[in-house]
Image (cartoon, rainbow, N blue to C red; front, side, top):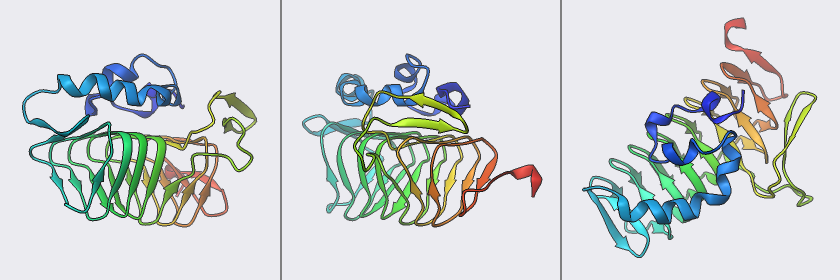
Length: 220
């Protein structure tokens, strides 16, 4: 339930061919920077290199107060709003929103992703039409600085990496002020209650409640 094919429709990202080279999405995190540097010069008409290794589509809207760190790609129809801070190694797809005081670092955002208000998204991949409510964040480093392990009930999957935020499947909704702890994987079409502290794997078509209870949507 946490492979790339389980979580994502690859028809909705420029990173499709890149991601097909991996089984699990977190395996792609280490190479995002190099992938963007390779892809940028090959982008088709409509993209402009506005500064070294920063490519923005002509139909995107980038506020003057936003910071675009290299390398990054901003897709067509996307809005990068006031005070957004893109630190670099960010591929932002088409028709996305990167909002006020949002920080992105080493991420892939599929098309139609919304991170509209006060979000931190680091070392993460956000699927098609996923949405992070105001103040929700991905925590990408464990407090003990150990390598991240993905927990799925009694199963533990070693990732071998220190920085790993969250993998959000397509159409995931994360409520306001929720925290996705390191190694969080949320399946397609699932919802996270506001103010939740999420750990491990949340199956697709589920609701993650504040106390860690997970219910299937058909059980409501």
